[in-house]
Image (tube, rainbow, N blue to C red; front, side, top):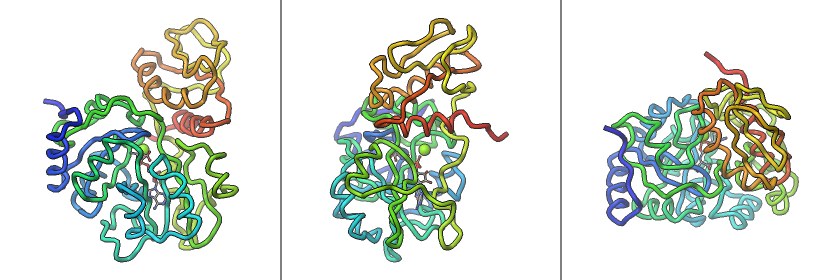
Length: 324
Ligand code: TXA
Ligand code: MG
């Protein structure tokens, strides 16, 4: 037995909505990566989500909504938050805003923080699922905690034991391939870049002005970016960054037109040097190179332009020393 995968038909959405109503978990595509969704108002369902991922309980979840009109029920939006939502939703932007006391969301979603992370995804399947179940969906990336995020339905189905996930809706490969950018807007302070992601910094700064890196703690001493563990997104193989050569026993993750020869296997994120193309290929190519059996993956330097900032962020976490 494996986790079932189904194409996005009317029957599939009805089945998925019934499962969500029963507090079960559904894998579904968004424009960034696949999410593992649960009813954000159901404590038991959200607890099941943490358990299925092996996710630390201090790491809060993003709540997915069908449109921006719903967002004000859950969080408090100041003018800047409204301007960002207007400019980028639906899309790969998550806004962390003060949580409304009467929002009806499970406390587990915020993991004890006085804030909530909200996003309206730009994907027909995700929006149809939200519509079909009529509930806000808490949805982390559909990978076991600390591992590569999935960009295809089969990667989700393979990552979880039968019975933990009711169904994965197959919407093909995700368009952006990297998680959303997360911006924190708290108590009129400057906009904080909590995670670089699918929308480049320059596009966001054109609306929000300069983005600030989060200080470690907020007023109450809570971590502002609780999910930013040093080691994350890790393949099994070790990573060697900024490589300009490749050893015979290494696999090579190349970028640009001049990849060095040698190595067990080479995949090129973007032969033309396009960071958007590279972002879309990142997790899928890391997965393939990891399966080549190489103990180490050499990764060529990636420029910080466009989505390069987010790619470098994921690679440096994937390369970080691991616990245990
Ligand atoms: O593109 C995405 O964002 C995907 C798709 C499925 O929407 N989701 C995703 O979820 O990447 P996840 O759980 O893998 O990452 C959510 C991040 C974590 O780093 C978490 O710490 C942060 O969002 N987060 C959630 N709520 C937060 C809050 N209240 N304050 C600060 N960070 C928060
Ligand atoms: Mg994740």
